[in-house]
Image 1 (tube, rainbow, N blue to C red):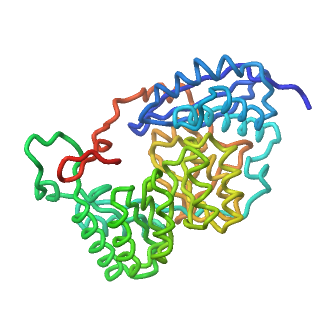
Image 2: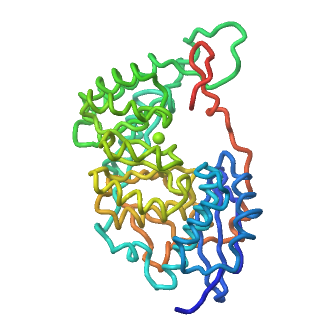
Length: 404
Ligand code: MG
């Protein structure tokens, strides 16, 4: 095998969707051969850029591009303390770029390197939100007309802060600013919303909901049991990662399929859940667990326990990252569903070769590697933006700060 080495590692931040995306470009000793990876941790993107430029770049320039596993283990071990989101994202950027290079060298799309396609298209779900049940239903109808059959249904974003909710709350004097929500109002509004969707739209549509770790264990239990009657495809993030052992109680008391994992960064967070079959869908964010190398292993591990994949696919994920996980979707027998937030025109311009969705199924460009390119000149037209952090400062009605 011809020796090919890493000549340079470059990092780009671009915001074609008004969300800062971090893209890594690994250039090689072979003229014109490079790979792209996603390192988007949008809420701390400067820390990821520093980790790559100041640590990974000087350490790994000159190393063989062929040995992805060895490079991944070396990147993970070289900080001694490991498995945090900043360093995992930095590693992911380089890792995915190395897989992109391997595919280009093999002249194959990377799903083919994993054993080939298990299906021709990737079923995706969309997110419908609004300030009233009417608005949510209108969005659902729009998506259904476009051919989507799986829709995650919300009202007033996470925690149910739709019009009027906040004004009805009773805060103590001098309550600090924040994204307030009331657990009871939130639960009641979602139950009413699901009831309405089932009676107005029917039972052919697969519906989901994301609790976003907003509830106490007791509230989660009663809420999920109430939602059983509407037969959701899954309920997501019923509990925070710090309390994954409570999934045992949830599992024993409800038949609702459970999806979990977008906040996971460490293997200990998923091992027990999967081995005990306390969840039905694994939902990690690929760059947050260190890229494609650990995600492939996680998918195979889940397959052994009949846990299906539902990788996290929000807008704070570059099209390179979205396409990367779609290669895994295609090649995993235990694929379940793929979250998809859509691409705007600017993203399509910056990232030629974005996956395309038609009638609820995503299709990849069959080009070698990941199949998505990066137009550096176009990216420069969309420089980093000031992100709105306000929704991350969540508070309960009495002002207690809680996880968002
Ligand atoms: Mg979620």
